[in-house]
Image: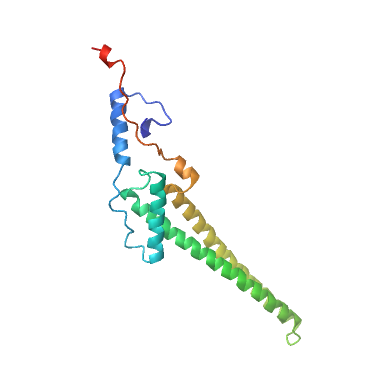
Length: 182
């Protein structure tokens, strides 16, 4: 069954259906000659990750990752690096805020500053910390959504793989009754 027929009734002849299926099989079975990391993957870590992802995809099916998919895999690797950086920044922010909470307690116990000034300084510190945490959390969430979408597009998630027909093309079956049709 060809893609155009999936999910709807198609009123086409058997010959046209076979022709469409053959064209789609040819389009899906691309070459694997140029599966090198693109030049815009600048770090060695990104290039190594690219090679790993390509090997994983080839392990699932030869048809899953071809030369046409190089850019999609590279985009996934770049977005994944952004996500990991956002997660690292968020963890660092949380660690900083723990240290700042200790300094807030020390400020609250200090007798050098008037209570009104102390309350104002603590409120300012808390609002700055909350704004920073919100901003980093928002960047983290956006990067997570982007990496999930990119992974789904290239088939690295379960539901992403289910969208692809990973079966090898069937060999043409011989007709047992062909000799009687003469």
